[in-house]
Length: 150
Image (tube, rainbow, N blue to C red; front, side, top):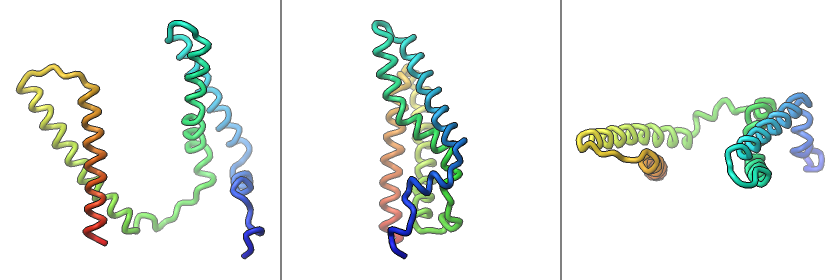
């Protein structure tokens, strides 16, 4: 098949996503970005217009992506029914299940130590440490599983 015979990605999207869905994505993006801008203008002292403009501009990309994912993606994406049978999916599942257990153990041990010592720790550094630990553990486990089974 010649590549000129295939429709482009934008033509495929316009053919598969109804105009109502595209309008809903645009409307949801507009409403959420406007809400973010209004909250930023209300909450920030000083120049409210600058805060609204900056926060609204920063929210456009993530909000548009999330609106597309929630509203339009089910119309465009046709999942492969055999995706779960791949070796990569099995590696990711094994790594994620091991990481979950490790994080539960680490959080339980940290809670025990904090309770016994009666320490008053701020929550933010502890939560950041748990997230970093989880990401590092997941990465290490995935590399080890993939090397062991390949």
